[in-house]
Length: 396
Image (cartoon, rainbow, N blue to C red):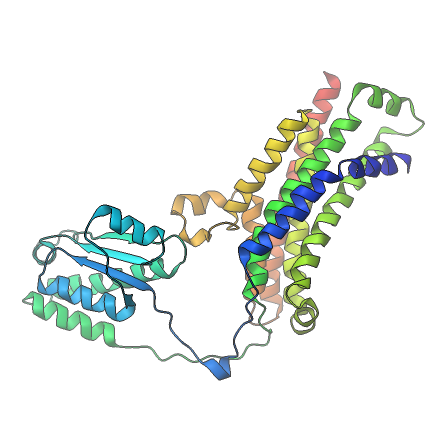
């Protein structure tokens, strides 16, 4: 196992990369995610609807615009925002208002005219804060109110006052909610957010170290001595790949250790072992994706600086597409669709679905295992490409 031991010594010689990309960045992730927050007891707290901070700028003054304003203010906590572009942008950027609605002049008449002729309803100007999903949910609620108002204006309402009255009556109807106890114990949302962010340090650290290892082994003198050694090429390659897998396992173990150490891991494993196993399994599969990605970068024989750039840029990009930086639901539809072509999306999707398991049964667990399987297929595909690249370089 001389090749295996030599590979591990090379990895240990570049432990600074492990400290920076794995230890330091994962600690930054802990700070970014924030303190742990345990799930509340349903029987003690019940269901409480969250109220976002909202602001409405009414430039119309019609009955319909006043009805919209009353509806929005009733759904959230109203704050004052000046009627100018800079103030509106600042309110959303500072998260002083999660949702800002601007009703243009003549909107009420335009809505009534559109309903009478069957044209498309006029649009409103909205500004949604990127710091939470509350503004987005508020926007969906307002859209539902406007669709209701448009429908009443096109059918039974004869005036703007009638439209507001009917739409407000329809919106005031509530659906009763109850909290049902599930078989699976709830985990802390902190752990989920931490695992989503962890796709960055895992990919950056493993890809960088494996790429440096491959570059060291592919140097001319080292390669000539390896070829002269009494060991088959397949055995040598297998030992090298096993050393790369060790780096992937170390990164995975560190991320899981930190996550559970800071979040009462013993209690989480005891109360929800299946959920914990599936969440850790999704990260383990992603760690092997990182191993094969580093293997591919090493086969490309790029410089150490280029490997640094690749591991960082691709690590951050993949983490972003997996929802590690911003909730993917807040991204445009095109970004959400594009994210499905990358392993980080399926890794975080598996972790999220495992976190949300309400019952531990075959069908629900099989869905999560299927998503983990997709991540493993990415690893196999990248490894196959790296073998093709490596063989092409040997022939050249």
